[in-house]
Image (cartoon, rainbow over all chains, first blue to last red; front, side, top):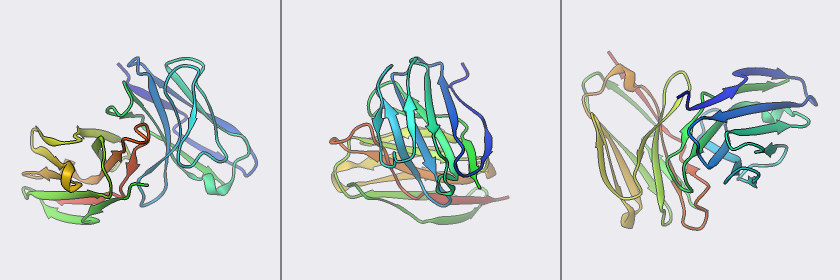
Length: 112
Length: 110
């Protein structure tokens, strides 16, 4: 099992550009999450999904969109990147609500 | 919302030492997890422990939900234990959302 994978690992964008981050999990988990981590801080939830075809807003959703067309995949989109979105992005999944969360390796995004 | 405080913020120890990391939270929780972020950034789930005590090798954790704190014990520290330890909690009102502490940065010197 690969667990949770994320692509790409690194990306540099110019202000105003768009991109999509892909998260995939092979554990048949229902719940998936996107977080961001800024220097010296814990993680903050951007969006999450409780099952295929569902999405919901987390703590810091502005400037991001998500889609969960397939159970194993959760996509995070930035339509018009801003320097404030420079961060490390982590995807996670869990079997149930409030269950143990398993994390991908992260994507380091820099917006100039 | 729930506030999560971790202490100490930084800890430097010699290899072989024991340590106790603390997580205080401001309201009732039904989900508490401890994570280790290694120096390469990978997050590993150590314990799912909303209450009680669990042990896994040299690591153990105790959560006293009624007093709103959790402790992570690391015994006989090794250099591979270095990294940042995070506590994250979820409330009954919003079970999907984990609220994260700022972490304890642990450095183990050989």
